[in-house]
Length: 163
Image (cartoon, rainbow, N blue to C red):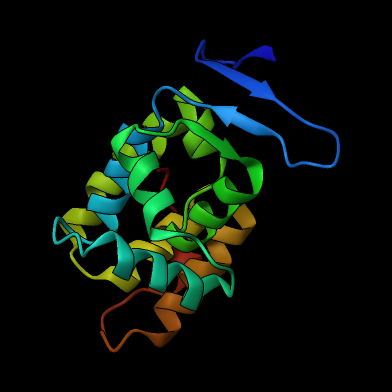
């Protein structure tokens, strides 16, 4: 087992067996998982069995409802990189959200904004857009503006906002 330190000072422990996916022990995982689940479902959390089913539907891969519950309640803290990627893909966050304190805090602030926005598809779009390069954000904004039914939306080239 080795101790890893994130750039923001959070500690993770990692262990690996030959032929196995690396397992991460993340003390903050229950809180981070709880935060992303609450943001994703806007406080209307379905049973873990339903969340696991939705993970399978959205990713094509199986995630045990029991294991999800164990991670969310802190009963288990060792999680594989593959499971972190699966959770991240389903909830629309970067896998680093679960392992890096700085990224987690940045994403948490954005989740609070997304909750305020209300629409689950808008939240997922916002989560996915996080971390895109400036040119990617400009392209996404252009698509959204082009699809908007608002007649008074300015063209993308006329809009330049920081943040």
